[in-house]
Length: 209
Ligand code: B1M
Image 1 (cartoon, protein in one colour):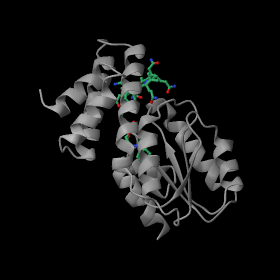
Image 2 (cartoon, protein in one colour):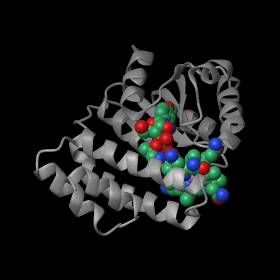
Image 3 (cartoon, rainbow, N blue to C red):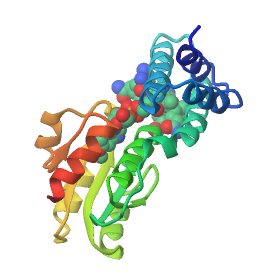
Image 4 (cartoon, rainbow, N blue to C red):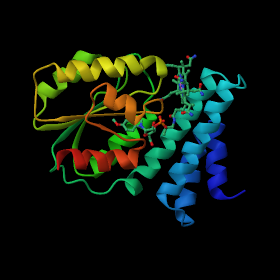
């Protein structure tokens, strides 16, 4: 089994203690940080499929998520460049009712490395908390909302609407997450959409240019 396959398998198996070491070994053997990340994301994909088919349940999904988060910690310095924080502030969070944060954390990391100062509101973020964060932080240029569940897509819509109706200006709103499409993003009035963390950073820069 190649090192990348091992990383994928141990994320799938939720081996929180093994994954960081394997990630480090993969990097030391010359695998790129992006390849290692993709292996972990593939592992999570398998976890999702197994959950859908009833082969595993929420606790197994949770340990897999923890294993991936531990792997991402090792990967972080290799993925993110030295941000200059000169492009302004990005307020980011996962919308109300949604506890998924791995994708949001990756997006946050990439946006930070693109040169933004990131204010991460965490998960299950009430609409008003997004609005307050825009008011309370200096030079907010991007508000990034993540949603991973079809059931929290309405929360994404409410969040974008509340931000747009708040009377606050000077920033752009972007959305993303597995169930979100470019069409849905446009329909709910977001200024930008991107399908993954790398393109989210590019989109954020485009939106402030
Ligand atoms: Co959940 N879960 N989960 N889960 N979970 C999914 C999303 C699911 C697809 C699994 C499945 O059924 N196959 C399914 C959703 C189905 C649907 O809505 N259609 C699901 C479900 C049903 C649930 C529960 C309802 C299960 C239950 O309780 N019965 C429950 C809901 C809890 C809640 O949120 N209220 C639940 C709970 C959980 C855990 C807590 C156990 C855990 C999350 C732990 C954590 O995040 N700390 C979990 C996990 C791990 C998953 C899967 C397996 C993996 C998610 C993940 O981290 N992927 C997931 C299945 C899957 O994704 N295949 C699943 C890896 C990550 C890198 O990808 O998050 O997509 P992703 O992020 C990407 C892009 O989406 C994008 O960039 C990221 C990086 O490239 N992106 C953005 C994300 N945000 C963005 C924002 C942007 C731009 C791009 O701009 C602002």
